[in-house]
Length: 325
Length: 175
Image (cartoon, rainbow over all chains, first blue to last red; front, side, top):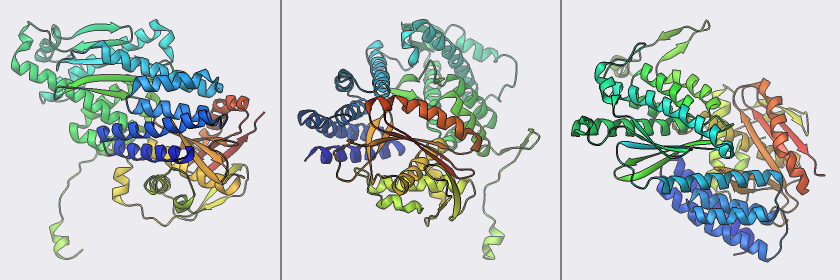
C-alpha cells in the first residue's frame, strides 16, 4: 500500500469505529481504532521517510496520535504526539497536541491512581486548560464533589421510591445512610475517590452495600447517558419528571466548563471491571438538552413561561382500528 | 445543491455508510426545522447567490430516534452542507480527512496532489437554531484558524445555520 492508501484505510477504520461508538459498542470500537492507528502510523512513517513535506508529515503524525489515544494506547499516542511536536507545527496544531498530552497524562493518573477500586467507590478526575494551575483545578474538583453528594442523596431517595423532595432536608433514613459513609480519598489534586460506605461500620451490611453499589452504578450510567444526549433512554430510567429534571440540572453543574476544565472523568466498578466515562459535553450545551428534555416528560412551556403537565396515555384505539381508521 | 451528492462527492477514505450518515444528519436538521426539499439557503462569503437545497430521502422515525443527539446531528449536518458547498464553489475538487479529538479535520485538496499538500483546512461549525449567532461563530472560528496562516496553507471557515438555512463560507488567505 502507498501512503495515500494507508491513510485512507485508517480513516475508513476510524469511521467504522465511530459507528460502533454510536451504537454503544465501545470494545469493538477500541479494536478498530487500534487497527486504524496501525495504518496511520505506517502512513506517517512513510511520509516522513519519503520526505513528502509539510504539513502532510505533521498532519499524519497528529492523526496517528489521536487514533492511538482513542484506542487507549497511551504510550503510543504520547510518542506520536511528541514526534509531531518536535517538528515545530503551526500554533494551532501545537495547542491540539499539547491538549492531547494533558489528556494522556490524566488517563495515566487514573489508571495508576487507584488500582483497587471497590464497588462502593467512584473516582472523579478533572482535566483541562487549568492543568498548569493546580489550585484552580482543585477548586473545580471541590465543586464537583459537592454536586456528586447531591446526586448521591437524590439517587438514594429515588432508589427507595421516595417522592421527589421539592424542599427541606432528606429524611432521617437517608441522612443516616450518608452520615458517616461518604468519604473522600485524594489521589492527586485533580483526582479523588468518593467512597460511599466505610468499612467497619454498620453500613457494610449486605443490604446497605447493595444499595450503595446501585447508587454508584445509577449515577455513572445516568451521567454517561446525559453526556451522550440520550435523553429518551435517560428518562426511561427515571420515569419521573422531577427526578429527571433535577438530575439534568446537576449533570449540567457537574459537566466541564470548557474554560478551566475540558473533561471530567469518572471511573467506577461494573461487574468487577473498571469502567471509565469521559464527560465532554460542556455546561453551555446542557441548555439545549434541558430544553429538549421537556418533550420527553410531557411538559410544554407556554409562552408566558409557566409549565403545564400533559398526561400521556399509550394504547391502542381498538374501535378505530377495527373500523380500519 | 442535492444533499445526496455527498455519496458521490469523492471523499477519500470515507465509506458509503459514513457519507450516508452525514447526509441523514443534514436532512434531520432541515426536517426538524420544518423545511422541505427545495428550501432556499442564503450564502455569504465566497458567493451571495442563494442556493436551493434538495433531497430525496425520507426522514423516518427510525432516523429520528437514532440521530437524537441534536448537537451531534447539527455538527455532522453542517459538515455535509459545507463539503458540498466547497466542492461547488472552490477550486478544490476533493476532500481529505485527518483525525483530531473525537472527530475529523477536513482538508480541501486537488485530485492528484500529494496528501494534504497544497490543501486548505476547513473549519466547520453548525448552529441548529440561531441566525444571530452566525457572525459571532464566524469570528470565533476565524480566530481559531488564524495560526494556520503561519504555516503557509490557506484555511476556510464554514458556519451553517439550519433555522433560516444559511451558510457563511469565508476564506482565510495564506501569508
